[in-house]
Image (cartoon, rainbow, N blue to C red):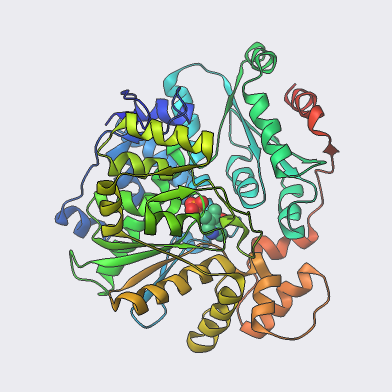
Length: 494
Ligand SMILES: *Cc1c(COP(=O)(O)O)cnc(C)c1O
């Protein structure tokens, strides 16, 4: 299997795609074709555990990795790191709906599924591409990605990870998750500024010749853990394949029977993984793309016009507060039958004017498979309360947006097909907003008390990774100005 770029054709191995992250022209790597599972292969996978299913999917894409390398990667990622060694359980919540719970990992959000595996895929790729250098992962985060990347890369041989977060731009819980991170190869630092300052600082360092030389002199190179790396996408395909197998096994579906997928969407990575799963033979009928008030994707699916020129809203589902959904570029490549010139043109328009419109034939294809809708924080909160009352099911603010979208879809179309809803975070990760949705009681402004309170009123347990933070020492206290990021990095590396 070779990989090509979305903006110009090429043919590279998966190890090269994963090690470099982005194509040289700024495009994203996509597989040249999609491998397909036969009905017999799906049947055989129903009796496999998660690691075996992951290996079966990875083997189809990462054909330049040996079977032993793939086994080493998936077992390192998924054995002993998720509750009950079951990274992505499917839970029946009645009304022909299933929750695909993706938050049983070390940071309680779905990014763990990819960021536990990426370090293994990346270090293996670096060995195969053969420079022998140490990889330095730089991350600018607004919260969830930073912690998931730290948890994934901590103490991984031949890697260093340095995370920058805006001092005033993350929640107390997110901050504590990062500043208590242990590991001999990790560094975490606050920036006196906002997320853009942190992100621009990181971007500038990536392309700074003096910094690059400094790294080379020390036998190191920069690498990226963000969601445009194919190494973050392929682990997400696994859980849709796995969910289909689980639903075959428990009788929710017959072989080949279609179901709908509902995904709370920000950067378009999670929902795109479901599209890849369909290409591999998982019988998905509709992709229901759920957005919050930053509803640029809803408008795109309905009109074919992508327009980021609109106000940015800060919401209770912050991981979906995004106006440029990077992974959409991969879908455009697919919808245009691999027309790189067209994709490059649209991306240039997006960069220059913040807006583009796809041709009518692409819009028609998009609408055959996608349905887009959105809801605001109040509607999300109402959904949290209702699903808890009706099904005794506790869901977080992001998942609530998806539940609402699934309902809106049923109401508008009358399509009662089974819905698989991606449940992307533990409710405890967003306890203040979830509690406000469930109770009118006035509460003290203490995050750990809120965890306890949520546990009391719902009869569910506080996830250990969050509860344990209380006793953890804060190890990373530095706060610097953006201009001082290069010297901070140098100081940490040598
Ligand atoms: C990142 C994230 C999302 C959005 O996923 P994308 O792949 O960016 O579309 C949704 N929910 C949670 C909890 C997240 O952390």
